[in-house]
Image 1 (cartoon, helix red, strand yellow):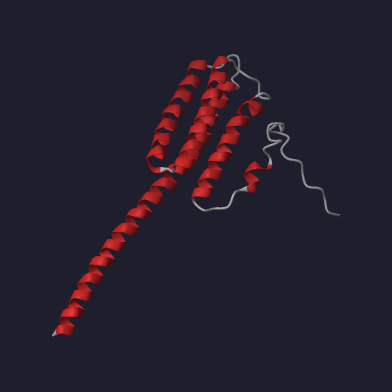
Image 2 (cartoon, rainbow, N blue to C red):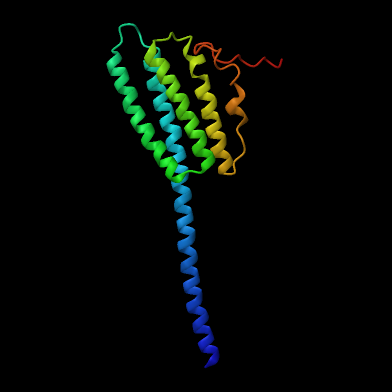
Length: 175
């Protein structure tokens, strides 16, 4: 009888402990998934907002500036919503680097609103934003225990000097 009682108590304790462990693991996975999703959302929205800013910055003289500004304002609203989600779910290091990206967006927006720039000036104007975005990606990868991407910054020194039609120099033929 004592053996049966011990076995019953052990069985009930095992079920209770197992359920507690499942709840705890599920909660941790949910938090990690939300954090990763917020990082992915910031990365995606970064490109959308950057393109809206580019269209405003390199506008033609006869462009509909009001429509371009409206596009930037819509992209900024989404950017701020996504950034708020990151502040709720993200780590301190990643949030700090996202705020730095946001600061560069604000500087670039100020420049784009002030005056139209030619296509050649845009790469130089956006470079600080690219650098802060690279820092953001580095912070995310560090938090997720992923190695740094050396390819991310490989062209950083020259990307502002390449025209879109030029592209990178082809590799020399080994023969």
